[in-house]
Amino acid sequence: LKRYRKEVDRHLADAATAGSGAHTSGGSAPEDRSDIDFLPATYLLPADYSLFVEEFRKNPNAMWIMKPTAKARGVGIFIINKLTQIKKWAPKSTPQQAQREAYVIS
Image 1 (cartoon, helix red, strand yellow):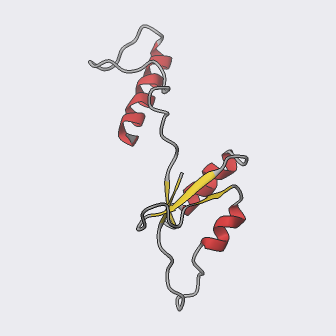
Image 2: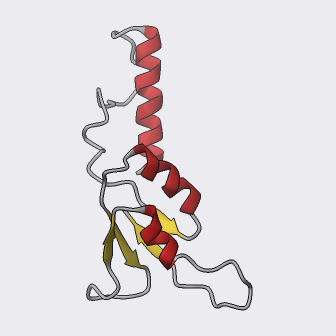
Image 3: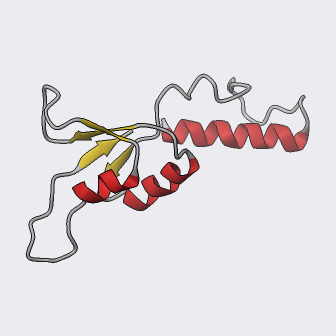
């Protein structure tokens, strides 16, 4: 889906610079991104933490769902709306402490 989004963005940028009648690819491309914006932005923490913080600061009033990657039946899922709630979850920087499990956040 990310690759398709990039293709759509490229097509829209090409169409904007070449005028409304331009069609750069042989296939049919959407006129906007509304048909692919049904999935929320998703990050894998702790690996994507800096990317998530950047997105979080763009939308400070949004609520985010955190889900552990290795659990089922809704165990460990929680909702956050402040970065401090993630910092409580985030692993400590000392090497003696065990790394916490990965979470998907969207």
